[in-house]
Length: 204
Image (cartoon, rainbow, N blue to C red; front, side, top):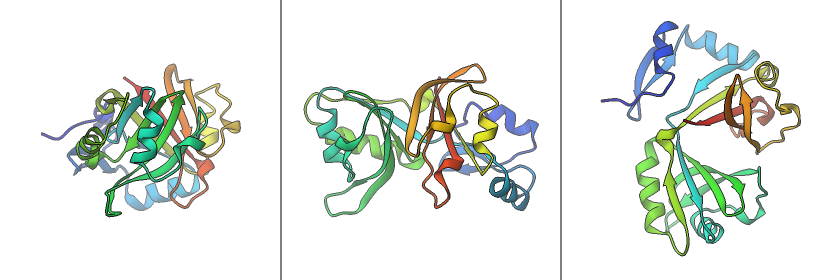
């Protein structure tokens, strides 16, 4: 049976055409691909990406573990900052690409690809050394992505957070978005201006 995100009940209300995407029943389009493409390019589009995986890493040896696990320099991160990185096999092949969020001292969250959650978590667990606690919080986390040139203006209507000051690859750990507490980040890396990409994550 395909998995469903918390927003699945809304899909039918808006005429979504859903498909099997890596074991998830997700919408591929609502009103038409061209129309939706133009909307995102010219205004904004809201994407349900709750199928993505999230892993919490904490403990006093979290930093050395992540330095060994990923290819980027995690020691450069400040609290409230995130970075794009890779997990690699010893031969240089890629296990997965991911985002590393520094939530606090010895406290991190990794955002990994949906189809690789089990594989990634297994790989991480095989390579844990020292005092590190790994928790797969994928099933407890919902994630939305608001993309497009009007994303910031739209989001400003539903939150009082100072999103205009939110820099690229930075995040606010807990803000109110339409009455819901969520982590809010600016983490676009698809070739467009990252200021037009807002990612919203909520621990359910």
